[in-house]
Amino acid sequence: MATATEHITLTAPDISCGHCVMTVQNTLRDLGVEDVSASAETKRIDVTFDPARVSLDRIEAALDDAGYPVQG
Ligand SMILES: [Cu+2]
Image (cartoon, rainbow, N blue to C red):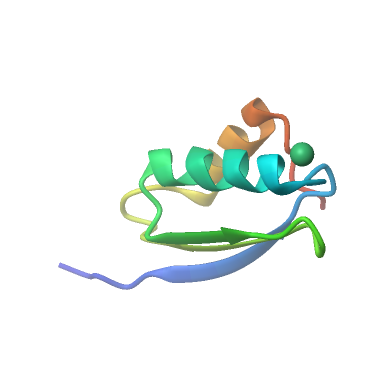
């Protein structure tokens, strides 16, 4: 059983304050990602996840639903 995790950095320009950071982090933690760290300064979201557990499409869809669409 592969246990490889992937690390990606997404950009979500609508992250503007600490509340947004918490919402983004909680949204992705609820999906079951290994680790997530968002920043209102850089608008970036660092995510470590197991692709066998949660897909990148699902991560992006959840962020979209939460009001923080990923750029690009
Ligand atoms: Cu905010």
